[in-house]
Length: 211
Image (tube, rainbow, N blue to C red):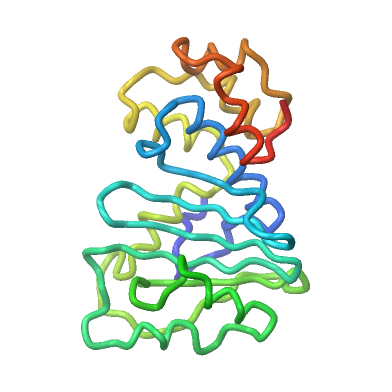
């Protein structure tokens, strides 16, 4: 199995599949954690008229923002302990195609906080990244840590959630949400017996998940 990082982005889903994955991850986190500030993943299906936004925040200063547009997808990650010393963060954005360049004006994509970025136009067959030289190391830009869970495998999230939320997480409801199956009270209760489907109305609307 390919481990996703900026040295090998072949395992990163296509923009459309990545968008659906972020919806699933955000919906799972909404069920697992009723309090938004403790969630790891989020997704805003109404970011703008023509854009949606996925994000990841781990509460320790690391984050990931993914903008989905009519032209494709732009992704920016930041590992706070790996801030690129003498390198200007603007170098990471120099190769972005014109179709996605407006994304860099979004506050979430400010160049002060970036250790890696990548993008893919809908017309492209592969993801591309800035190609900025990095120091030696197993994960010099934090992309391995931040991107490796975006492999589209529900078991990857299940293992993460058990560790992060410190509670048992069954595979079947996670897999159902990965498939975008209709969200039901049974699925919700299987993941978190303290959460009711009716409590998730606003989250479902924001995420754009079927319920």
